[in-house]
Every structure is written in C-alpha cells, then in structure tokens.
Amino acid sequence: MNGEARTTTLWRPTGPAELELVRAAGWRAWPPRLPEQPIFYPVLNEDYAIRIARDWNVKHDGAGFVTRFEVDSAFLARYPVRRAGGRTILELWVPAEELDEFNAHLVGGIVLVHTFR
Image (cartoon, rainbow, N blue to C red):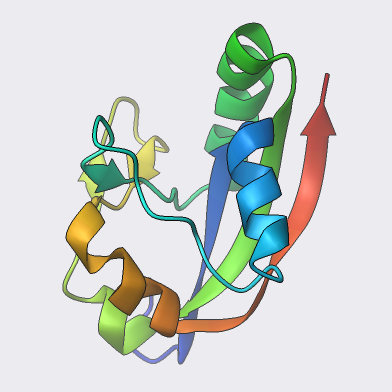
C-alpha cells in the first residue's frame, strides 16, 4: 500500500457460494461473515489469490474464483498487513463486525478476474 495512493487494489479468492452473494449484491459488497468466519481476509497479491482459488477452493468447493477490487487507502491504514507465510503471502484481517464499514469504503465494483474448475 502506498500512502500517496487514493485506493489500494486487493484480491479475494472465493468459492461459488460467496461469489453468488457478491453477484446478488450487484458486485458492490462482500457478504456478512458466517459465525465460524470471524475475519474477512482480502489479499494483497494476485498470485497468492490465484493459488488459494485454484488449489483450495476448487478442491473444497468444485470451483474457485479470484476477484479484484479497490478500497480507499486511508481507510485501509487501520489494518496492518499480515504475512501468512512467504514474503508474498500478504493479507489483511478485517473483523467481521467491521465488514459493513469496509464495504462502504470500496471504490467501484468487485471484478471477477479468474475462474478455476
């Protein structure tokens, strides 16, 4: 994330059920988390999102998708970047109770960029 940038590009690997909820929301919001999902995890690297969608979502859900979206950079500053593995395995941890506010800071729509089956 660049402090001078007005928006930050994020990616989200997802399965068919979540993607359908995004579609139903007009590609403008992420759906509320389920009780067993206390954190929303967007990622900062397209390659990492592809690996999750292709290697995990396809295996568990039959299909995996990668979405791309922009979020107001000043708002994102509240979420430290978390390293979940190697140097490019970077994600943000957004508490479920903050997802409505997160969605309010999306700039433009959520775009489907990759599909794996």
